[in-house]
Length: 470
Image (tube, rainbow, N blue to C red; front, side, top):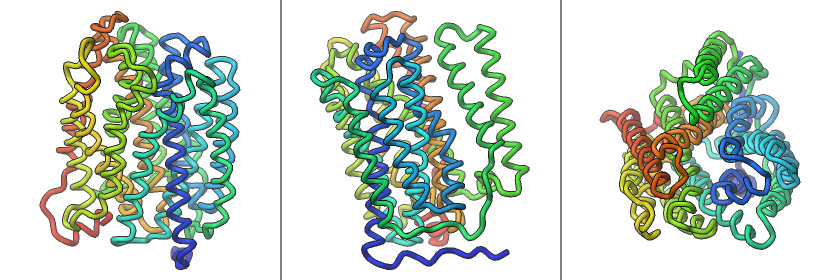
């Protein structure tokens, strides 16, 4: 049966809304995502959470994102991107209120997982709305650049917005504010024309369950591994994770209408976007999520001070992503991704050796270089996500790309914490923590540099430029 696409968005007002709403949703989702980075100590103290529980306070949202992004993409394509977007905004308001009122760590983590699921609907449906309104060419490049810039802006503003009231109103105030800010997104969805795919694929429940369970088992194993990697529970969970993720691959390859068509990995642009998103989650988001809270203990920074310091990374990323669309057309999305990962690794390497006795500005050059890399990578991943799949599967493409990013982040947060704990010898002294962070930075820098080599395009023609989402 021939695929019938909805008519393109033509009116200026609708096109502005199709850019503004996904951008605003991405900004709020990422501000909320980053909120615990510099308020982790206050949040853990308020909830009575121990060291192991801190990993879940920080990374629980990644499970909700990983579990729901592909499902949200499928539902958006099948039942309407505007409808899924509006439902996601309502769900984010409710989940944020649950986090704000949480009496203990378990309820808070449940709320963060629910926030992740709601954010997944906003991200997948929002990028699908954007892809439909800007079907290709220079306009799409500029639009996805704005989307990537909002992602970076959320990372910059989230920790600041969350840490400002910690000393006065308390850490819960951010989550009440997030609940309020989600409401206008739900109401504003009516400004965007509805769009959906030409044919329905249906819900891939086996795929969603195996992926979620596999990532959960892996994250749990990495968290428990901080106490020793040879324990039977750790080894057992790693085996379970491998079996479940292999089952997910088998399910997707056998289904007639999978959540994500793994055969698209034969497309170089889609494969590069998937690998880049996964490694961005592990090596960049995982590292910086952990690093911000550790700086409070190694350099003696306040939560607000650590948030402001990190603007030298996230603020630079925002500015670079916003201008990425102005780069020459021969500098393709894959070129930007490769250079972005290269600079991310270089920036992380520049931060090696910082510790007690150093001043905060010792980290600024490395953070700024990594920020340039993150800005280029964020803009290129958005372009590749919607440009490397068929036009009627834009939400699936964005869902698959963001799933790889946040599955990587879920793994990365636990992995970086485990590496740092091993390097510190399980000591809580500032010197030992700094040594552990150095070891983690060395690993993530190496992963970023290896990813840059893997995604870099071979010398090609103008046809390749079009093929890769430019």
